[in-house]
Length: 105
Image (tube, rainbow, N blue to C red; front, side, top):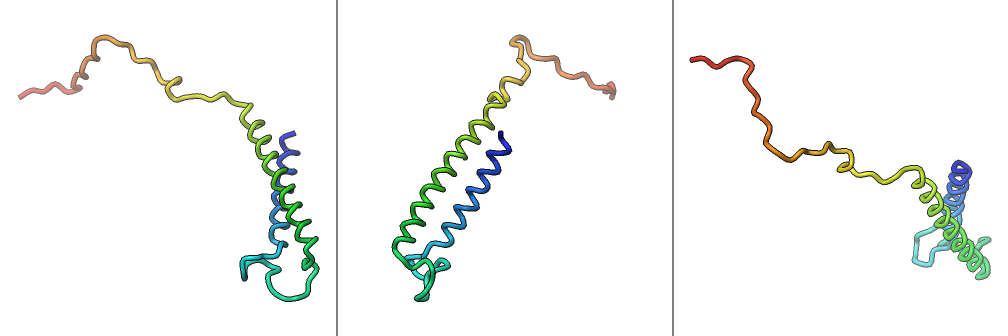
């Protein structure tokens, strides 16, 4: 199930990238279809179609991202390093270490 969703997620990402790159840029010299007179993406209807397609692909991409995050998070419980730390026993402080070699002068 997870592998299938990952493949669908990657295909959605690639399709979204492709649809965005095909769109005509309205901001100047950016984009692939910005200049020139003739082309197959010059009609206003195709621009609306690409805008709708982008919105649908983006929505599906976000939904698949959320589903993958939920599925990935369901396998493990949140843990804290404080839970695994050894408990300190309150009481007297530990004895200082004795030197291995006796100090003689």
